[in-house]
Image (cartoon, rainbow, N blue to C red; front, side, top):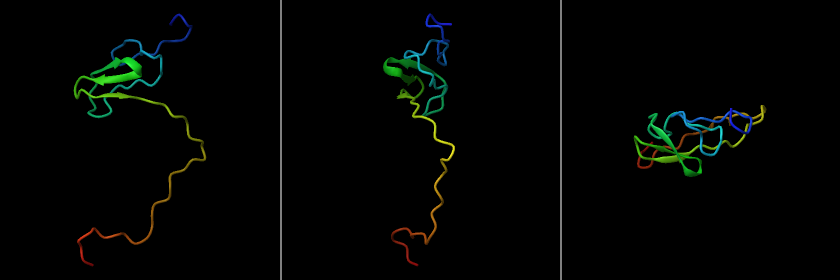
Length: 83
């Protein structure tokens, strides 16, 4: 446990998450590799594809949230095609 009384968040390499946030990626959001290292500002560096990205939690949708209905109607043909 950390000095603050709560458990410290850990990253994929076992080190503490630099910002103390809970959102810890275990794979790169772009290439899927697991070789991630924390960098300043709560960002993550993938050593495989060299990208830097962050993970953000935006909230929880209410239980009444539903996916939109599928579109119905006549499909639009691709340009340049003849009916």
